Amino acid sequence: MLLAGVACFAACSSGTNPAVFLDHQNAGDAASSKGNYFEAEQQYRAALAEAEKSGAETEWVKKALHSLGSNLESQKRYAEAETDYQREFAVAKKVHGEGSPDLLLALSDLTMLYINQERFAEAEKYNQIALSIVAKLPEGERKESAQLAEYLRDWIKNGRP
Image 1 (cartoon, helix red, strand yellow):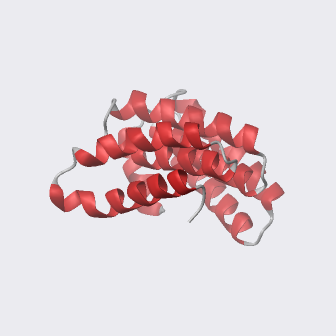
Image 2: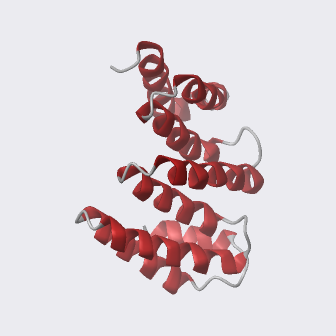
């Protein structure tokens, strides 16, 4: 987590206080691991507010949206999670560009969210984007990402494993 924060700090513009952001993220993670989703949500929203001090489209914001969306999905608050995951994906595209492997986490988030709601056509759409990105990765980087995307493709096709 700390390394991700340092990398994010290097990649993001000024405005976000890394210590404050990481404190909120870590507190959210701790609360979530204890099943205290309300507290986790509050911490992730505070992390997002801190992240947005650097602008609406940064690594900070992408990370905060991922955490917040995951928390909301855990609570079956799917519409809210979808909004955060869609924004995470949009930020990832803006920060990294179309076709970047850095989009795979956001694509996986959206695919799983739609699978959990049995919205298989939408899940397939995002998983196909992931598969196309994975296909362009160098052979050594492809295996793990390909396994997940292929597993999700089979899951979509069959309804559930």
